[in-house]
Amino acid sequence: MNTVVPDAPAGRRTAPSPAPTGAATPGRTDPGRTDPGRTDPGRTDPDRSALDRAALDRAARRRDRRVYLHSHPVLFALLAATRRRPVVRLGRTVLVHDTEAYREALTRIPLDRTAPGTTGGAAARLTDGGLLFDQDGAEHRSARRVLAGGLDSAAVRRLRPHWLAVLAGRVPAIADGPIDLVRLAQELSGVTAAALTGSPAAPHALAGAAARAAEAAARDHLPGPRRRRRTARASAARAADLAALLPDPLDTMVAVATVNTTVAALPRAAAWCADAGLWPSVDAATAPALAAELLRLTAPSPLLPRVAAEDAVLAGRRVRAGDRLILVARHAARAHRPEAAPGPGATQAVFGAGPHACPGAGLARVLLADLLLALAPYRPVVTRARADRRAALPGWAELTVRRTRTPTARTPTGRADTARADAAAPTTTVTPATTGPAVTVPPGPAPPAPAPTCPHAAAAALHRGAPRCG
Image 1: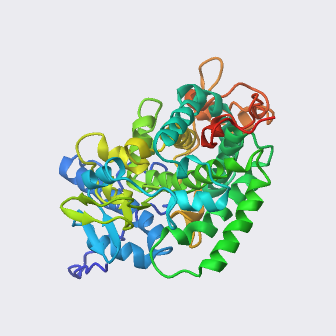
Image 2 (image 1 turned 120 degrees about the vertical axis):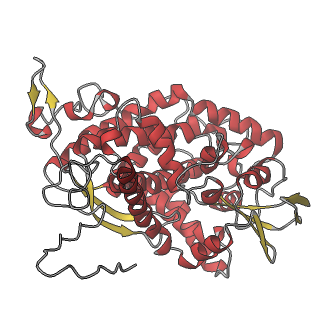
Image 3 (image 1 turned 180 degrees about the vertical axis):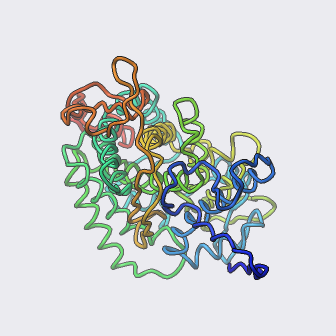
């Protein structure tokens, strides 16, 4: 939107227009401070501070909206046009926006777990079936309990050193120049997926294969005409490539879910944090809650495609067996609003609900909190952002950030040391002083991949019956 500025009176000089929020501003080292170009530095008017905060939030939302507008503009426009109604029917497709209706659809309406165009249907085609995504009833509940146990707090503690080592080794490079957070997220997701499945593949190779498999199957998750034969062949080929990197092909969907949600979520959340000037507020106490809120605002998996298995009534609308349900997690979580609805339902909505809630929600929050803690000392700003037009989930193909400050490290004597992080410690260590205690790992090389009796321990919950272990 263009802003009309009235002409200045004769003889008066006009102040220069401030740089767009989130852009790199020469000489500005603290994105959380008030821009002196807009506000008198000595002024402490709380109303003006609130206006500045609202402007920063709008800038963050504008940038994040680009991942939708550049990848699925028509779908995004349709969802935006219908979001004020809880449930909207378009032929045999039912769009569900309301938080309570969304939860009711996931907890009370029987769903066809293997229907074409659903997550379970895609899982069944990518493998031979027998996955958590395409199971029903007691079998589904049992598999969920096992998988939730494999992703509980103890499992997160076991997995955490893997991604902390990556953060400790990669983030300090921002002291020398810009870094690409998408590349970093790919490595973090690959390391985590490898630890979950026992895969010996290199992190970037595993992440790339999982992203291509999801991309090939993404069309089945969206309404509209599709070239089914071509899509089926591409999906089969990409799934085979990914399965070749895993100990068991049934781990395919674990890798797909881990990689694609991580790569979509982490860069978007970091960009939002930078544009909204939130870095000064990030510390070990605030990072967990901030991570949960950023996941709500970005909604990495904005749509959950499902198919009703039986007739039902949803928010006063009749739903027939076979109707396609597009559950809009983005709107159920109120990601399009600055504040969540009261209660935990809206915040949890990005991870599903009830028996269909994502068991990896806790892991995702911890991973994002660790990334924020690693980046916060550098107060990075976004210098380049390019939306990914092909990815299965809305996200960035490239998100480059640069630091705006050099963190102050503490020497063993307690004195401040403002030397660069990479010069403060030998390259062989993985414990940079600038990352803070919450993202510190023991000195030494990155920990090796775990070698449990079952090489795909956490993913064993996706199998029918016993894991296929030798």
